[in-house]
Image (cartoon, rainbow, N blue to C red; front, side, top):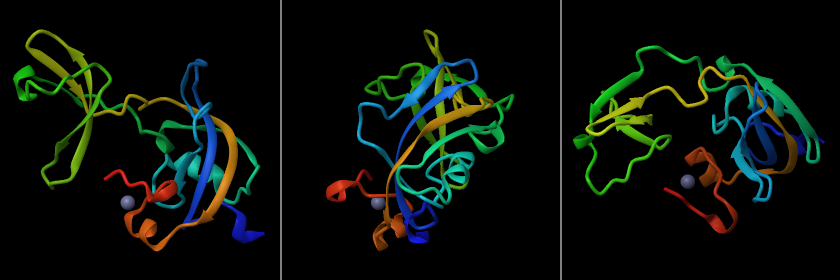
Length: 165
Ligand code: ZN
């Protein structure tokens, strides 16, 4: 039935494991609630969304997503060394942590802490998985219509209307 396949405007639940080219597992929903996303709203990387389009509940998937349809290519010159003092003293920073700066247009620009020295912090505007081929494997476990509110927000609201913003 067409109405029960992953398509724009549906909230799709999946179980998945994300493995890198070298076999390193970097993310998995195993042992947790399934991951929910709103199809067609760029909640997930383009290559995975494309692979899931048209799948029904219980359908398994396995896809290799090239960086262009994943987290992009690694760009040189996206690293910046900034003073530790830029971060408020009560903000505990750690390597790998994601933060956001305000761009010139007022939009948040995510960056990651790459290195911490005594007074200098190296930040990187590349996603940590930029340049990686992403191997997703898993199974579709649920598909439902998105609510009006979810469509407006561009993301699913979990069981009980859980809201994280
Ligand atoms: Zn919302």
